[in-house]
Image (tube, rainbow, N blue to C red; front, side, top):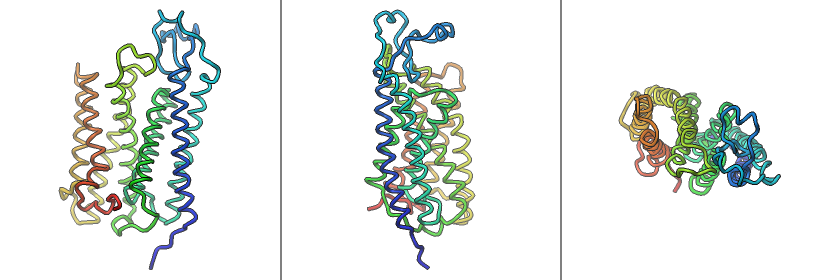
Length: 317
């Protein structure tokens, strides 16, 4: 019996996805304005706590104390840029969530049965990781970079990966989608956070005052990977269990399975290297970026260039 699609909900999902892209772009502009112009003088309390003499309104490190006399008070609009950008990010993330849910309701299944849906969900997880880590660690300085990455990812999905809401192959009509794929999406979102931090770490020049310090970037990357690695481990194990149920074996050297394991090894190598005395900073960040490259190839490249049993999620022709 053919599966009926709620066209209205599917259309609403598509429209909300486009609205999400616009909200992330505007939020990115707000974060960029804060980084560029929203520097304010520190209070006596901040000095007593040992913080820099100048900090941005969004919490980013700023110029050394000896330059304090040369700094001018930022314009009023610059002071509002960071909170407005953060509010827009929450609004965009909420629209993003509703877009995912309405696509699932439109077809009556978990909404990550193909590459388009997976990339949309992965971008959602990346922004979610940024927002919830900000609640704990106040890492607002990454807002511009995470939102632009999410906007580009969604734009790529809409332009090159989009498929209309519809049924999936029988192997995906399983509760394992909620277990295995959800874990992979959450871990991927955290790894994207770490990847963005690693790229900024490498491109940041000494003495730059509008980007976070290398120590802050390394700290954010490490925390994201520490949380994401066990979730990715669970995703790999759950995938093996699902493979046994669907195909009668736990491991078959399928390209997606192989690269998921390679990714696991790469992040395990980073954590081992990070825990080794003296192996921190640039060397450790290069290792985690190699792991991030493995992740990206596993999530996108395998479906484009290799195929295998996971070819049901290939890029549409």
